[in-house]
Image 1 (spheres, rainbow, N blue to C red):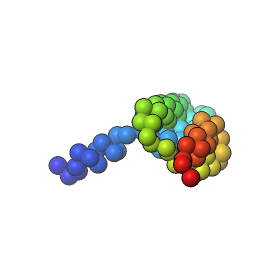
Image 2 (cartoon, rainbow, N blue to C red; image 1 turned 90 degrees about the vertical axis):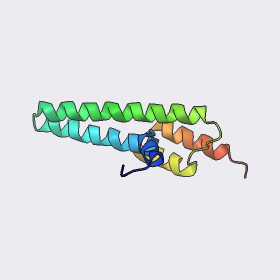
Image 3 (cartoon, rainbow, N blue to C red; image 1 turned 45 degrees about the horizontal axis):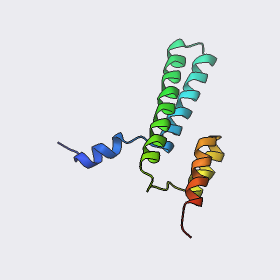
Image 4 (cartoon, rainbow, N blue to C red; image 1 turned 60 degrees about the vertical axis):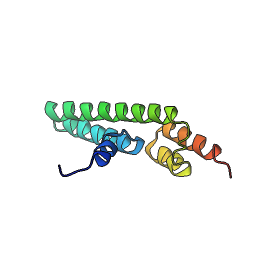
Length: 101
């Protein structure tokens, strides 16, 4: 038993940022598979891409259920712009507008 239950639970929680990283990895690997004519790489990349999309959807659903969590606001909005993810950008804007400044 090298890890505590709380760290295991944290590692299993879906996240928007890790989902985007998984999505980007999948796109890159799939593109490399296409460029090198490697069906295995292309399939692996497509699976990673789909896993990233699923993780982002789950993270968004978890956030919606936990309405007290405001997200990362401006940081998330900027990350959404950089990655081209409209959903992440909108969530960031929503998080910023929900703060009681």
